[in-house]
Length: 134
Image 1 (cartoon, helix red, strand yellow):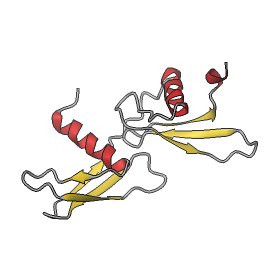
Image 2: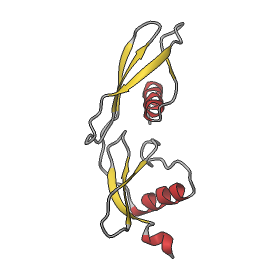
Image 3: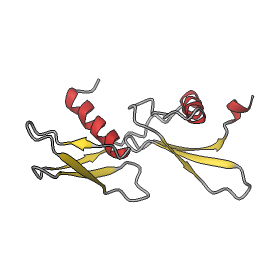
Image 4: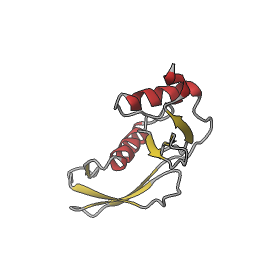
């Protein structure tokens, strides 16, 4: 069970991840916040630096790496089905949107890496999954 502050921080992380509009959390400010991704391409979790254009408050928002336990097959199948239906799949552990990254494959078979940039869980899968072909 997360505290109210942890839920708010997670929500701000998700908004930064999806490049949505953020407002300053300071009481009475409400200024627009600009976020900048500080993560390297190989990082499992993302880190953002935010700055309010009105009051100048800076904040770092980062994921909370917890790679164990890994996603199970039922979770992967559910995320794949949501992706096939053009809906946003979310990580079953923290409700963060999961990103599907297309991987090069010389045999012309679709292959994807699934990433949750909040908890750091990642896996690779063939596309479509064998369970969806039945």
